[in-house]
Length: 333
Image 1 (tube, helix red, strand yellow):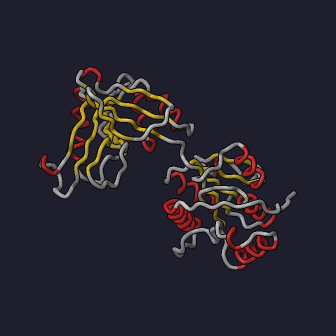
Image 2 (cartoon, rainbow, N blue to C red; image 1 turned 135 degrees about the vertical axis):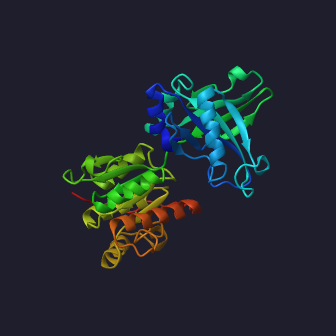
Image 3 (cartoon, helix red, strand yellow; image 1 turned 180 degrees about the vertical axis):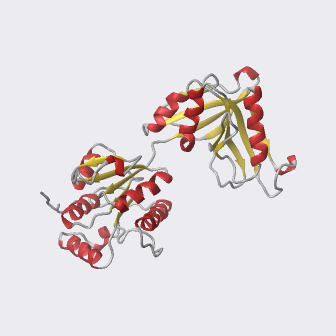
């Protein structure tokens, strides 16, 4: 739902009726996670998806029928039904009409998603009393995303956690390109630079822009509990008076998801030499990915951003755990 929330809001505010299909259960492997949503708007346009290509036409037809008739139904799509490819697995999809009267609680959900807050939506997808099917409950309580079978009903619990953060230090073309990749991957993106002239919000649409010394901002965020094991930190500036204090601060943090620094060749060598001279050993420096990005032969800011995003994903999948002790701090004006 998070990826189509703006489209859902548009339909909700239009006063017209579309339909929403939600993937609530899979049997066997699936390329899309449970909780994936597809919207069919009042004009028949599709946003989002609940399958990897299987049963698309059948689910679309079911959504149109739901919008037209108001029927709310849990439907199973499998090869035995004769729909689409026999190579497809079996999935359960809840189809419901979507409008301000069908889902009056939706703006609260959208507001929490936009604000980066955790929210859980409970939806009755089957009940012995048909009038109860499709009722929603919105709460900030955490819950596993799953279909829960109760004696007289089935309830789908869809939990949206706080999105991970990508903090980019330095305001330049590489930061702008990395913002795009971060947002595509579902990160809440922040760009931090001490130079107000370059840290212009219009240059980084969709990202939070902060004017501050990077190391000071990182310290503040850690003190506020805003840095955790999912947080990705990337410096795209190679100015030593900015980069070195930042890296020193970051490497003293007990946890983060990823720490990368752009710059190869002499910049890379000088960076490591400076860090070693200030007391950082090889084990600690192994937490730093430098030069940042998988070796994809990137040459442009856009290509570099893709290589860094790929490395962030690879590191996130391996979920390393590191712990460090205190080290001397760099100073900066």
